[in-house]
Length: 184
Ligand code: AMP
Image 1 (cartoon, rainbow, N blue to C red):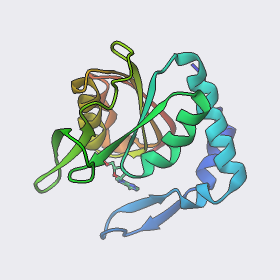
Image 2 (image 1 turned 180 degrees about the vertical axis):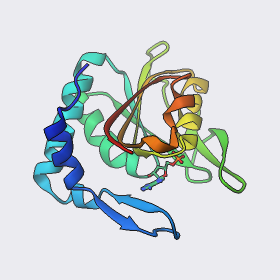
Image 3 (image 1 turned 30 degrees about the vertical axis):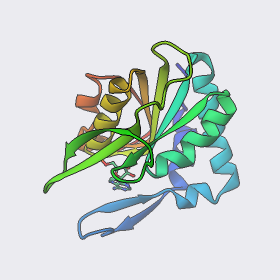
């Protein structure tokens, strides 16, 4: 399936800013706002995602709170499918299903509306999307949540994969994984 060549990857990577020691010392934060405010880079990235997923016969795009919404909504619009938000706990107004995942210290939880995929399609195919995969905890919990809600997570897509953290390893046991750009 369609992937970018190394020249195009380097071009997109050059539009993402590294912010050292944010939100705490030792973390290099991948700031995608510099890609988003560059119309050529944002268009190029979205055209690639649309091109890749046009052939997948997806029924929904599910985006992870909150940067997954930025890429997931225009992708869903272009593919003419519904968009489903996966949110941090306590944000969705209707009845939800939740999935906890462990952090360095303690737990966090993502939630989805119980009827998020109920539009008449049996076992709908869902593409999960977020800006970045680090340890993979958020994405794994989100993929589990999609399956718990009666749908089928057929692929998880990330703009960036911090490959040295191997966050995609366990996720690959649940679904296929595609990252536009790898950072090692
Ligand atoms: P994880 O569950 O460890 O894979 O963390 C993934 C989530 O945290 C994504 O929603 C990212 O937006 C955010 N995140 C984690 N590490 C970084 C980083 N170095 N730069 C930017 N965002 C990050």
